[in-house]
Amino acid sequence: MTALSARLPARRDRYTILPLTYLVAIVILGVTIVPLLFVFVDGFRTTGDISNSPTGLPHPWVWANYGSILTTAPFWEFLGNSALIATVATVLAVAFGSMAAFALSRYVFRCREALFTLFVSGLLFPIGVAALPLYLLLERVGLLDNQFGVALPEAAFALPMTMFILRPFMRAIPGELEDAAMVDGAGKLRFFVQILLPLAKPAMVTVTLLSFVTSWNQYLLPLLVFTTSSHFTLPLGVATYQSQYSQNTGAILAFTALAAVPALGVFMFAERYLVAGAAGAVKG
Amino acid sequence: MARSTTADATVRKKIELTILLAPALVLFVGFVLLPIVIAAYYSLFNWTGYGPLSDFVGMRNYTFAFGDPVFVQAIEHTLILTVLALVVQGPLSLGIALLLNRKFRGRGFLRLIIFAPYVLPPAVTAVMWSLMLYPGGFVDQLLKSVGLGGLIQEWLANLHIVLYTNFVVLTWQYIGFGIVLLLAGLQGIPVELKEAAAIDGATPWQVTRRVTIPLLAPTIRIWVFITVIGSLQVFDVVWILTGGGPANASTTMATYMFLDGFRSLEFGYGTAIAVILFAFCFVFSLVYQRFALRRDTAGALTRAVG
Image 1 (tube, one colour):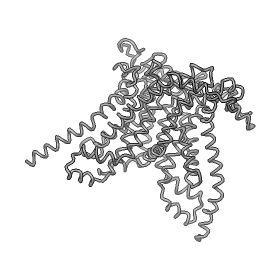
Image 2 (image 1 turned 120 degrees about the vertical axis):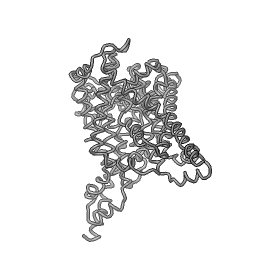
Image 3 (image 1 turned 90 degrees about the vertical axis):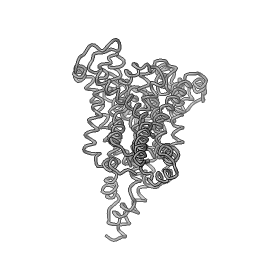
Image 4 (image 1 turned 180 degrees about the vertical axis):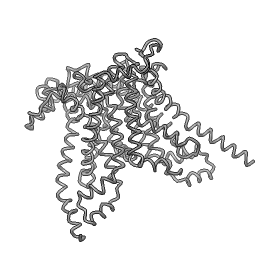
């Protein structure tokens, strides 16, 4: 094979594949965006308007659906509960997870690898599987219908992923930095707080976002734990709202759209860190 | 003097390790390991949530579960969803990732959009799709307007279709994750290898088939693992979209656990279902770890300390 004929297919490929790439790109874009647009736009329609013409545009645009949801308590209560639970779960998972990851990456002691394997084995045991036994446990310790009854298990179940991502990252930081800190009189814990954590910031941001999003989206555990509707999280609230107002499609659409906003908002701002998390999983 | 400083250092190390490890261990043991033990224990009793555990039934909850056609069906449905995820979402994510790995205008934007459904709460996805799928609704009208009215089905009411409707919605939600994961893997493959193959006369297809995909294998194996564990416990979307119905046509193991364990207050029985569900995840992990993942994790777990 000459170099020329080798280059030829590559060039042809560049020109014939590009239109196909755009075609596929447009199809993917459509399939992904249309359902989201449907929810947001049809939130501006009355239920009658929607059932007359399901694929039409709002005529006229009605603000009442969004208005009435944003001016009454339930939506804000659900939002507040979700924020509280996700924040507590994330802070605990990231704080405890990073401490443990530090111990398991920067100290030498017996059972270290066994301990890490134990933590990481939690990855194969998702919270959905444990929901019912967790319910029984929470009943025993009096945490049913309590925000911490959801936040604490969620923090615990976020630990494996946190440590799985943080440990290799902390290991990769050169030992010379640690030696230098020691020479300057810093203890190991001080090295952790003042030098290692700032250096591990990209990985810390990634695990923070992953824990937050996982907790924010959790549905089964809150469904089991909460009985008082003012304690509901947003996902639970959306599902409940749908069954309560099943006749008022416009209102459900508006509520669903509003419930999607925080997740999409966090996502727009944090996409690259979440992608980094996915990439981190690849590298192990 | 020297001895006492060594002793001091040892004590200090122990204290530091305790401070660093204890909180995570307490949380993990309390809320991850303890529920497994509770589940295994409670599953041996007939218990409806009140009074002491006194009605010991041994393995009867388990034999009853496997004798219940609805549960056997739920296992089948869960396995169908899992296999479909692998054979449909897998090639689809790989194909899209390969396309997105080329340079073209708007690539970053497309990648952002494609990943968005993955971060949406599954409950929101499910409510959204249930509003689009009702008879004569948005999806039906859309199909009609592009001349595909003949394809219209009772998406959520037809016993033979409802499971696949659920699968389509699940795919909409989760495919972005596979694409982003595989893209990350693709970007870790050195361009030189592909160039070398091209210079040796390989066609683009051959380069993809013989160089890119084999080098992507570790990423694909991780994707398979995450997808199977996720599919085995699928609950949110199915529960909100169909509740496992109509007539149990779309029950999964997790919706069965919720309905027949929690809702019907058969907690002993429900925990037995949880144990079975856990066993599925566990056995899969062990087998998969043994035969597929070992090569990938061997390096990661035995690497020297920094």
